[in-house]
Figure: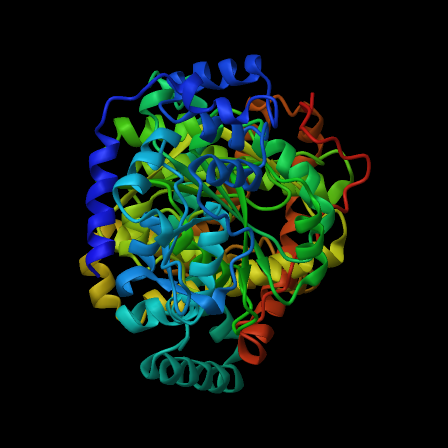
Length: 632
């Protein structure tokens, strides 16, 4: 215990000491792994980035981390442990995972040398001085990746327990582990029974009043689309664009990138290439490739690649539920950044996205916990389905979500390119591992806890499923997750009203509830219209004075709703210069029928397999280029 405390004090003292010339410190590398010009370049970049030269060389791939720390150990006259045996080492002084990861220090169980140190943030001369003043014979060196891997192994059960049970333990009422409350099940059963009885007694009247009730419910949905379209018309192209951060590189924080992958070995080369293009100091990027132990193909492909030095593999043990949010939760304790962003395997973010997100956080209020970048499609040209998907994304991310932000309403986040303050994310217990649209749920939980979300004018391009079968599986999961989210947050409507306020409560019903309801109801409109048309009463005027307001409201809601939704698709596509998509706007109602089919499939899965994660297969696009091209 005393040795550990002395080591911590000495590390703090050495961090404050004046630095000797770095070219002399790193001369043990010259001629073995790098040449003098490379060292000089690393020293210049390190001064600009505010890091040590070895961090620049490792992050840029100029020297392998293991080679550097082996050479450093030789220069310091201490052994180097290339492969730590997890069973032989434990955290020093009984430290927890957070302290162990911060110190990079482990202790042997039963060996002559007591400690294993990963001196990631120590200069070579500072390390030599520390070892000389303490007990050099008590230390071995290892790479930070090896030490973190041993720490992960030691705390694997704790990490998994937190990943699966963290939210359900701290906030059980906000977890989808139990999807419905008793009163919700009773209300649903009673409502269905009353509806069936009414249909048997008075079918015509029941259908009429049910239709009119739905018309009233859809008024706010239509109204919100009209507002979003109006805002899009009035907004100039520069109005929502953040200025890239003027913050110098040395003042930028560490940024963590979490990338969950499952059965996506073929996506790794393109993914690594696009992450390497991001405009952020490489030594301040903490990239975690989150792989599943149940997916040996992707694990083998990742280990066979020569990954950048700032890229690390996190292997998630096989444990139910096998969902993306569980994998993200498992990897989160290993993240080192002040900010964290989620990308998927097929994502192609614009180069300046991290800087734009960081600038939004800097300029935003202290309660700004999340920044959502826009999502769009790079294979829109492929077929009718991908073009409709692109129109949908344009409307959602370029019009609807910015309108929600402007109106200060809860934002159901997109599944990727969410940038978070790490502290706020951990306070909320991160993602719900039992919710298959963990992003939308987290957006609502942020709002309920008093945090705000913002959107930024930066785009991440991803692949739209080009096959109907893949699209249907993905959309089923999304709608099933929306059902989970609505039911979870409506367990206590009074509490939800109090936490979101009247406007936020109505916004939640409009965006989340309205999405589900519109998908379920839409095909029945055509069924009823067909019946009315066959009977010759489709355009017939109401038979009583009382029916006139409802008749007018129904037609106004129908026409306005269709026009507003299609106008959003048209305007948002036109603003992006996607003129080739304009001809597909009139066919949007056919696409909505496919959404309805997915909604009914989602209900079936909600009952039979509510935690089942239907994986979207990526890499199916034909002729896909690594970067998107304008659809003009």
